[in-house]
Length: 206
Image (cartoon, rainbow, N blue to C red; front, top):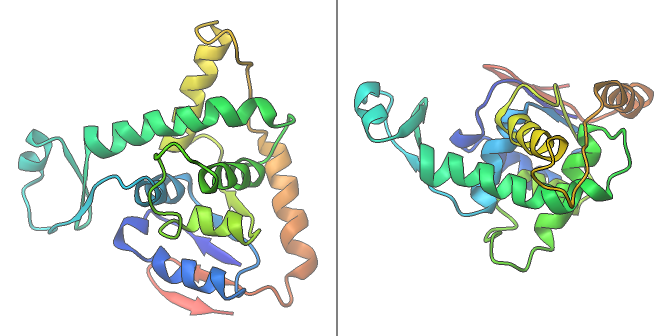
C-alpha cells in the first residue's frame, strides 16, 4: 500500500511511486485528491516550474502564480486549464459508470480513458502515477470525493447537469459509503503482507 497525506506530488515524490508501480511492488494507493489533481498536470503537459520558497508571495500573486513550497503553478495556464480538461474527460466518462461508484472506480476509468486518448490532450502517459496505476491495475482510493480541486471540478459539472445546462448528460455522484466499503475490502484481508509505504514528513516501509 502507498499512503500519501499532504500535497507533495509537485515536488516529484511520485516519480518514485511510478517506478515501483511498474515493478509490481504496489498493491493499492491511498492518497488525497490534491495529489491526483496535480499529478494530472504532468500527463497533460501543463506547466509546473521549479522555483524558490524565498520568493515574495505577493509578487507571485500579481503574476497569477500559485506556490507549493518551491514549485510554481500558474493559475490560468495550469490550474484553470486542468479544470477544463478534467471536465472534458468527465463528460464522456461519468455516464458510463454505474452508480454508486467509489473514487477507485472513478480514477481507474479516468486513467484508462487518458491512456487511450487520441485527441492530443494527454502528452505524457508515463509521467503520471494515475495513468500508470490504471495501466497496471493498481486501485487508487481518495480520502474524500469532494474536498479537493478534482472534486470541485466534478461538482461543478454535476451542478451543470442537474440544472440542465448540459442536457445530453445525466447527474452523477461519488458515493463515500461505497468508497469506504471498497477501501476496507481491499485492505483488511491483506493487511499482514500488503506492501505499504506511509509518508508524512518522513518515509518508512512496513
